[in-house]
Image (cartoon, rainbow, N blue to C red; front, top):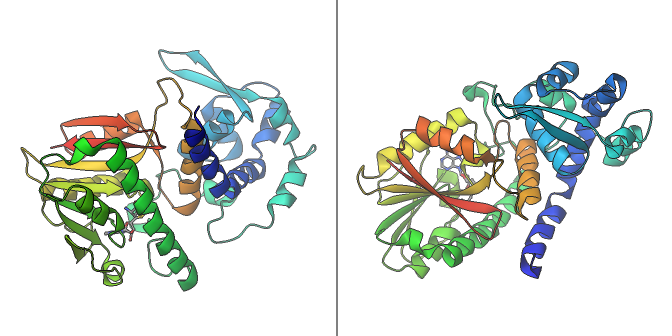
Length: 342
Ligand SMILES: C[S@@+](CC[C@H](N)C(=O)[O-])C[C@H]1O[C@@H](n2cnc3c(N)ncnc32)[C@H](O)[C@@H]1O
């Protein structure tokens, strides 16, 4: 691995180190290491789910993160039908309550309400996608975070947009060929669309976000700010971009957003450009896998039903939203680019 890729991966570890700790803490609170300790034998996902009282969907993501980090082992028992089980490692044996589990819980500190993850949350369905859409809420809903944190978060989002846009511009400029108008849905303050318009000056840019967000956005050459709600209607254009937006929402809500995107583009020539993590569970693991799984845990903590999706999950989502074709381009980054066509 070259130095630049190593640095990119390490910076995610520093940024989300607390999240990794919260997940290990939660696994101990759920009693996962203890259940394996008392059974003394491997367990399937459904056995583990019944033993700790946590829905399979979210438990699968947690176990995917823990096995990747050597805390448990996953063994494929059969390919067809696909069957696997989990078993202990020396590390999981150290995390039982009668060994060093309590030590880790104390070091992780008391459970905070904001952006925490508790066994109770998980048992109640957080991260499982099972909660009804009407109750779905992320930190984007007003009043979830205090004003100072919201300001910090917005400033961070602007730099996130800048980093994301430069990865796309440098790795996949061909994505913008033939596009005369582009809407960046959930574009925050317009940083990213401003960069696309500058790099590809034939594009007319629209930055689309919640009214209160675009109200604060600075004027940008070649960019029109439009406030609205992506669940209701999205401005029409040749192409729509969704960068780091869908991972905040459940499948059900993503399908609603994608259907609105489809309505906003032409059937024959339009496309939706999705810049998001794609977890490749089937292929060979690349160097970004650990960072992608860590981001998935951060999303589980920061949202009710958001998640980073596998290739299969993306395909299912696109099909369910009425897209007939798609391509996935991997970049030298944790995110990939999905181009979806009606
Ligand atoms: C994770 S941020 C991504 C920002 C930007 N695309 C980036 O990559 O840095 C998600 C964005 O979606 C916006 N958003 C949330 N709900 C929305 C809605 N209903 N309609 C339009 N935008 C929304 C938020 O305000 C936020 O700017």
